[in-house]
Each structure stands twice: as C-alpha cells, then as structure tokens.
Length: 170
Image (cartoon, rainbow, N blue to C red):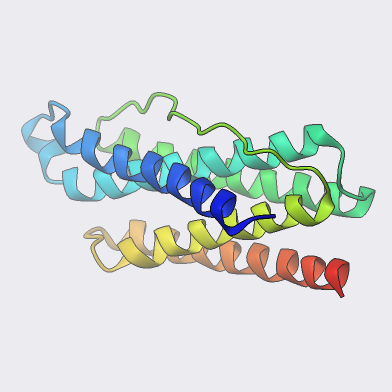
C-alpha cells in the first residue's frame, strides 16, 4: 500500500473530525446549553471519528479479505465503536444537541488482508490521536472520564491490530 493512499485516508478522517468541530459551536444553543458548547464541539468531533471508524470496519468486513478470526475481532471492535458513539450521542443530548449523521469518507481501495489491517491500524491511530489531542480541553469531569475510558479501548484496538499486521507481514 502506498503512503499516499494512507495519507489520503488520514486526511479524509481528519477532515470529517475537523468539520464537526467547526459546525457544533455554530449551533443555536440556549443559555444553559451554551455552558457545554466547548465540550459539545469536542464530543461532535469524536462522534464523527467514531462513525468513520465504524464505516471503515464495516467496509472492510464487506470485502472479505480478512481471515475469520480477524473478521470476528473486527465485529467486536465495531461493537466497541458503536458503544462509544452511543455514549457521545448521550452526552450531546444532555447539552440539548441532537446529532445528525456525520459525513463518512469513502473507503479507499483495499486489495488484501495486509492493506485492510494497515487501514484499521491507521483508523485506531486516528481515534487515539482524537482523544489525546482533545482530552485536556474538556471541562466536565464525567466527559473526561468517559474519554479516557474510550482512549484505553482505542489503544487496545491499535495494539491487537498492529500485532496481527506484524504477524501477517513477518
């Protein structure tokens, strides 16, 4: 897989995250909701990233390029990302925001298991980066606690997928 296509994927995922950060503060918020607006923007960015991750895993699953054990692992990770997204939606709802579906970038061409695992590892790296880069900006302690918990999941996903990629390419 070329570095150019990986960079393009990262750019697409990152642009959907940045787009979410730009849109949420512009929403009309009531006085009480305005207090949570900074966290809401971060939550929306994280939600966009989680939805992009779900779409990536589902798209790769549809390609049938992974062995059955790795496909099962992917299904488990999809469930984690869905739970993360549900939690993020719940926090946004507490701020009076009903999130819509985030734009999801198209899946770049994946021809084999190695390319699929490279994309999944990169997806998890983007997830880790998203939570790490925004955690210090969160205001509500409950949100920070949830973000750290999600970050731990993303690190686990990245680790196990990197291990499988290493075994595949060794």
